[in-house]
Length: 156
Ligand code: HEM
Image 1: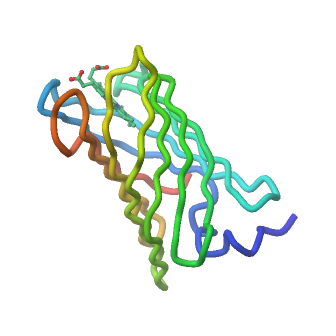
Image 2: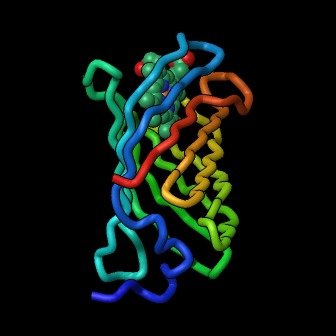
Image 3: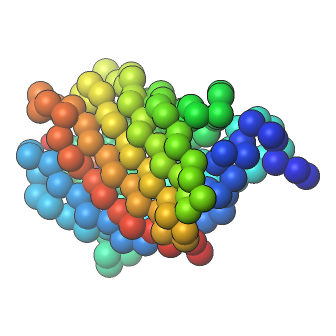
């Protein structure tokens, strides 16, 4: 099964990535986590995406799933579902270089009535060689855009 041509700019992301992360937000205690991300080719013009996280002592933390699309050579879209009641449509520029690729994705968020209210998010993905760095900021629970997460992952 060959990768759909539209996904070629994101081909380097395929596979499973694992590593450590740190989180913070003005309203909560700082925390650490272990993260695993998987980008899967399903033979269609999108990749499957899933993320799982655990506390350093192995307790399950945040998870999310979705799809990655490359609607044009320099654009990336992540369509995400959060079990905490938010959905995100994250879109932005994809830059590909000889060493890897990077993207800055700005999200529209839809919150369920019972969810903690998230107004907007920004996600950064930066792949250099076999190291994938992720960063995440959000405007949520009455706070303007602020850093929440950063992780550094290696190819598994
Ligand atoms: C709060 C972890 C991703 C939105 C928290 C807290 C932790 C945490 C430990 C504080 C305790 C709690 O309320 O559960 C993580 C981890 C993530 C992640 C490990 C993934 C690596 C996200 C994402 C969103 C999000 C993707 C939004 C779409 C929030 C909100 C709060 C929160 C709104 C509540 C802040 C408050 O009530 O003051 N997160 N989170 N988190 N997180 Fe995350």
